[in-house]
Image (tube, rainbow over the protein chains, first blue to last red):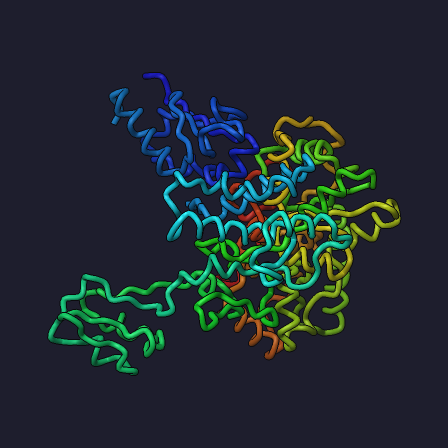
Amino acid sequence: MADKILVEICVGTYAWVMGGSKLADLEEYIPAEWRSYVEVKGVISLPGCDEEGSLKPPFVAVDGKIIESATIPLVLDEIKKALQNKGIK
Amino acid sequence: MAFKSNAILTRREVMRRISALALKKELVEKIDRIVLTMRPRSNVPLRCCVYKDRAVLQYKMMPVLGIAVEEEIDELMRPKDYARVALQRQEPVKGALLSVVGEACSSCPQTNYLVTNVCQGCEGRFCVLNCPKKAIEMVDGYARIKSDDCINCGLCKKACPFHAIVYIPVPCIDTCPVEAIYKDEYGRAVIDHSKCILCGRCIQACPYGAINERSHLLDIIRSLQSKEETIALAAPSLAGQFRATYPQLKTALVRLGFTAVKEVALGAEETIAHEAAEWVERMEKGEKFMTTSCCASWMNLVDRMEEIKPFVSETPTPLDYTVRRLRKEYPKARLVFISPCVAKKAEALAQKSADLVLSVEELGTLFIAAGVEVSQGDTNVNGVEASSAAWGFATSGGVASSILVKGIEGFNPVRVNGISTSVIKQLAQTAKRGECDYNFIEVMVCEGGCVNGCNTLNSPTAASSQMVKELGIPGLKCAIPEWETAKK
C-alpha cells in the first residue's frame, strides 16, 4: 500500500480559537473508502501559524501543503487531490 | 458540519487585540489603530465601503470594553475614549448584558419572502390571487412583493408551482425561542429584555455579529495584573473546550495569572446529593414530578412561567455551592467564573456568586494575547478532584444521570435537550395538567447542554467525546430518554 496521506490539524490555541475547533469533527466527514489511506493527527504548530504571521488561521497541512483559513470542505478537497496524485480514486 | 462564521472570528479578533494591548498597558494609546489594522484600505470591504466597516468595528469594540452600544454618549467619541472610561471604572458592568450594534444590523430584509428570477410570470398568477393582502403585483411580466403590504404569511411561497418564491429568515428573530427580538422602525434588531432568557442563540446566529455581550475582560485583566488574589472557577463544560486535558488547562490559567483554579464540579457533588434528597422528599409528599434548576437560561424562562414554578427544584446550583465554600476559604479573593453562556453570567452577577465572569470564548482570546499555549501545560498538576458524575453536568442528561446512578427506587427521568417554542408550550401544558409520564425532568436550554453554550469554542459532540474520554462523563449518548422523542 502507498504511504498514507498525512493530514495535520493545528490544534494550537491560536488556530483553535480562531476557527480550528470547527475542524474537530473532520474525521467523521472523511468518506469511508478514503479512511485506510488517510492519517489525521493534531499538531501544536505548523509553519507560519504564529499569531502575527501572514497566514490566516486555522491551519491544516495535507501531505505538507499548508491550507490557511481551513474548513472541512477545503481539507476534504485537498485530500481528494492528494489521493488522485497517488493514483487512488 | 459546523460552519465557520467570519462575524464570530471578527469578534474574537477584536477581543484578542484589545486583550493584548491591555496586557501591555498600551490600550488607550493604541486601541484606535485596531480598526486600521483589521480593516485596511487594501481589503475588499465587507459592507458598502471600508469606512463603514471601520465604523462598525469601532462599535463592536464597545461591548468588549464592557460598554453597551446603547450607552453611546457622543458619536465623536473614539475607542480610546471608551477605553479610558473602561479602565477607570471601579465596578464591572451591570444591567442588560446583551448589546446590539445597530450600525452592523439593519441588513436583514423586512419582508421574509422574495420572488426570485425563477418566476415564470405564469397565467395562473397563484401568488397574486392567493395573497390575502394583495401585496403582490406584476412588474414587467414578473411577480414582485410590495414590502409595505406584505405580512409574511408565506401563502405566496406555498402557492407558487415553480418554487420561485423563497423564504429569507431574519436569523436572530428566527432562532429566538421566546420571541424576544423584534425590528424597530429602521429595521434594526431590538432585544426585549423583559422576554429575553439570555440563551445567547442570537449572538451566534447573527450573520453580521451585531449582537454582543458586554464583557468583563478588562476588569479581569486588571485583577490579574494587580496583587489581589484572583481565583478562577471552572465550569464543568470548560473541560471540553480546548484540545487539552483539564490539568493542562489549569496550568494555563495559572500562567495567565490566576492565583488558583477551582472546579465548579465540586459544587455539583453537593447539588447531586441535595437534588436527589429534594426529589425523594417531593415524591413522598405526593408531587408528580420535579424539574432541575441548574440551567440559568431555564430559570430565566421559569421566571416567566408561573405554572411551572411549583415543580422546579430549589436546590442551589453547583456554582452556588462552590462559591459558598470558597468565600470562607478565600474571603479576600476575587472570584472569576469561567462561563459557557451569558445566562450563567447574569445569574452569577445577580446572586453575587462571582465577582467577575469570563466567557470561554474570551478566555481563548486571552490565552492567545498572553502567549499561553494551553496544550503545553503540565498534565499532572493536582489532577482532577470531582467525580465523573459531577463533571457530567456539562452535557444534556448529565444531571439526571448523576441521580440515576444512585439507584433510587422509582426515579424515572427524562431530559429536555434544548428548548424550542413548541417544547416550552408542552412544558407549560404538563405543568397545568400537573401530570407527567416521568417524575424528573432535566431541562437544558441549549441542545447538548452547557458544552453548546453560546460562548463555547468546541463543537458539542467533540467536547462531549473529549470529556467522555478524559473524565468518564456519560456524555451525549447517555441513557436518559429525550423529551422530544419520549411519550410525555
